Length: 273
Image (cartoon, rainbow, N blue to C red; front, side):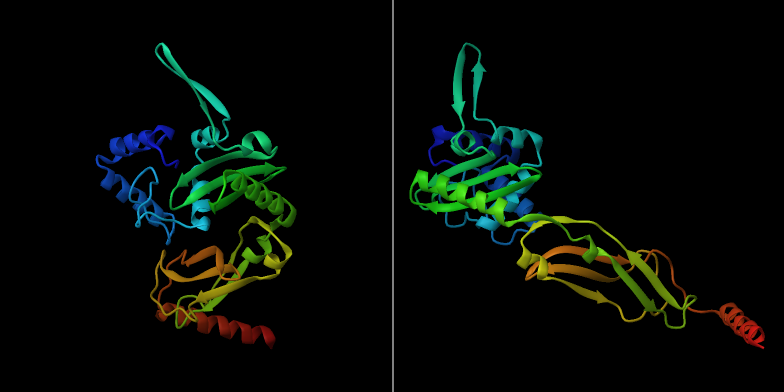
């Protein structure tokens, strides 16, 4: 957020007070949401972003927050609005978006500027070219022009470097887990999923799979029991996770199962004779 209250922080403060009851409670709500989103390096103390040692984030997590925010059509539309006149009875005011890229960079379609004395000049911006949309984050720029120029370079490099890549073949898994003295000999399943990501060649070649599934099933186990998970990584970043959950009950083998198995083996012998 901009540092001065006349730049909109009074509005953020009022919204936070209205929703949270107190600023402290609203900050608690924000932090709970951050944890829900899996953010580990973000902490909020206020709704407007003014300097506070316990109010911080990272470029990566700011991009994640932005991605989440623009999924809301109203936020997405507001961030892409160059200017708008608001009317309050007989009073009207022209509001102009401080993200200059919306006017100077043809692919820009959203973003938010920010400044505090400690954070310096910051910018989150989005741009779309073809069927690809990217989010860039610039923190701590010394000048306003530097943050816009740097952001344009980041977004241009993203369009050039990354290509939409189908990695669905890495999301096709087959498991065959033996069942010890159970009513079935093994638990066999095929899993398939689809995913398209913007990747460069190095990232695509760096995809690998971690499979952590039980070596055997010891009955009884039941529908809904977790028996493992499969994860897909690019270097150290997890991009996909699949929980392996039983979709049936598995029981210990009973007397009837042994009889049926014995009869089956007997008939197999007769077939060979």
